[in-house]
Amino acid sequence: MMGNVTLNDLRTRMEEHLMAVEEVLGGLDLYVQQLDARLGRVEEALGLDPDGLTTRGALAQLQRLAVLVDQMRKDAR
Image 1 (spheres, helix red, strand yellow):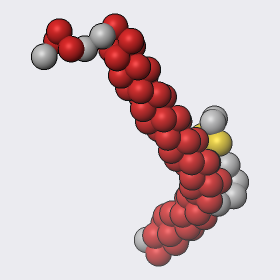
Image 2 (cartoon, one colour):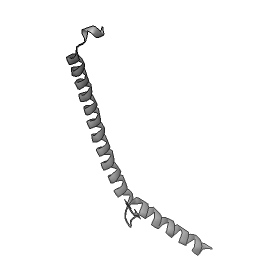
Image 3 (spheres, rainbow, N blue to C red):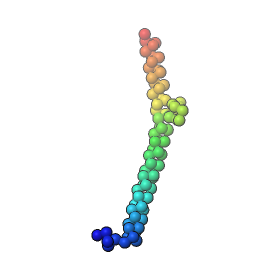
Image 4 (cartoon, rainbow, N blue to C red):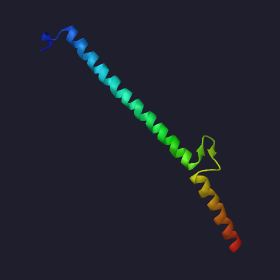
């Protein structure tokens, strides 16, 4: 079996496999870029920035509501 395979055949097969690997890696890179963009949109909707919470977004609203509820509990006592 190996006697019939030439060096050119092996080189051609190796190049084909390397091209397939490049295509897979390119697809993974595109997928990671899309995930990064989606994560950015989620962070923006939640109101997150690299330093922590901002004054806008869903988490900021929840934080304001928690403070309001806490104040109402204190006032009720």
